[in-house]
Length: 141
Image (cartoon, helix red, strand yellow):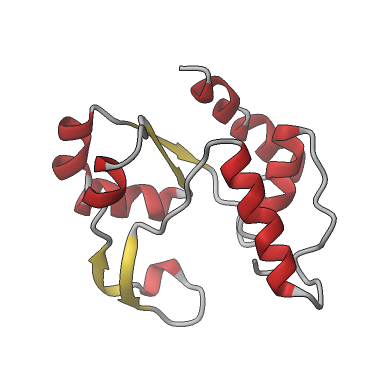
């Protein structure tokens, strides 16, 4: 929900919808609820690869002592077939900590999408939307 992260703006572009509340809305609870409804309505799930880590600021390169999340329960109780990692760091952490355990067992495909962080300045919003439209195709599988 960081106001400068472009994730939710990209999702608006992919699905052709507009959120009523912005990322920096004074009513953060309502903004989060609106995004939760969006995720559920589109049959998406969001979860961090890591349950915990030591990190300095938002610098992915500083991640130490990473503990991956346990995805067993969510994968056992859902029909998730595709994992989309938002950025190379998330993808690499998935590959290192989760791929061998979950991909064969659940027959998952994993995709690396570009980061929506403002630090990924070479990717403009329209270019991100174009790449993220793979979501629409995967939802039809």
